Image 1 (tube, rainbow, N blue to C red):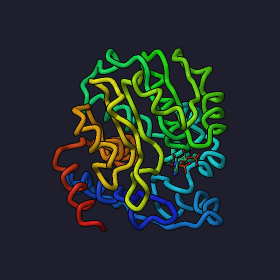
Image 2 (cartoon, rainbow, N blue to C red):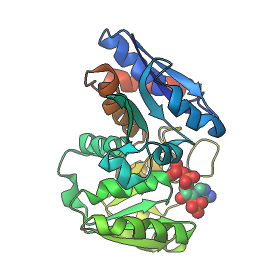
Image 3 (tube, rainbow, N blue to C red):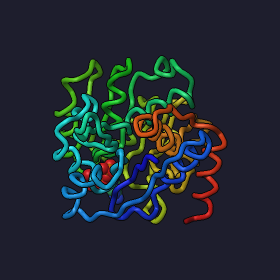
Image 4 (spheres, protein in one colour):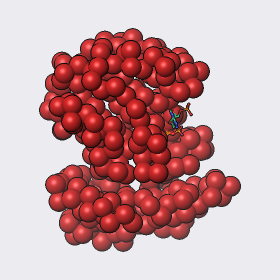
Length: 282
Ligand code: ATR
């Protein structure tokens, strides 16, 4: 039996075990995927012993993604670019690390909007400058956009993010002061929130979406609640919306394939299962 894990701290609320559990059952694979709570001081040790404990690999989540990056030497090019690792597996006795968050975000945009959606987008506006924003900017850089604006409350972090990624793609990357957000909206055909604003228990993100272009796409990587106040306001305005759950579901695909040897499908039934669980507020 193959065993995989998700390691984080805290880890109780992770929905990943539900996702992988659904696929294991659906494909009749004898395997398991369990939550493991590891405090930051013990994370290095965990990386050294998980294979001996019978695990084939697993996911890494908050707050360990950057620590995994600095401790795992065998990394994919994508992980290298993002400076963070969320998926581990063992190859010829060596622990390897990848980052599938970006793949998840981009696959979800493509499936929700239809391929070629970039044709309507000249400028993308990314809100936030943490690890989530970094992944999304890197993903958008692989697409034919002319300009990507990065707005953050702490402007210096947006400037750092732009500086570290700008050499990698053709799009113009520009940091934007938080106060200038509303002024940039008329130019932004794609708006992505990666900040914690709008998450359950946090203040909501105040944006004057009436200023956004008529066909703008608004996306949020927050998925609790599934329809954040930002997405609700965008929908009311008649804009296209893409919620954060799709990203969570799609980032899980490459890990499952590596550990269990079969590429799983993100089905409406799987999505409904997670939506029901989120609704139950567990
Ligand atoms: P992650 O790595 O998951 O993206 P993070 O590094 O904690 O998480 O980043 C959280 C983001 O939410 C940051 O961009 C943060 O802005 P700062 O860099 O200025 O801290 C943003 N954020 C959190 N609370 C905010 C608030 N009240 N107003 C605006 N932005 C906020």
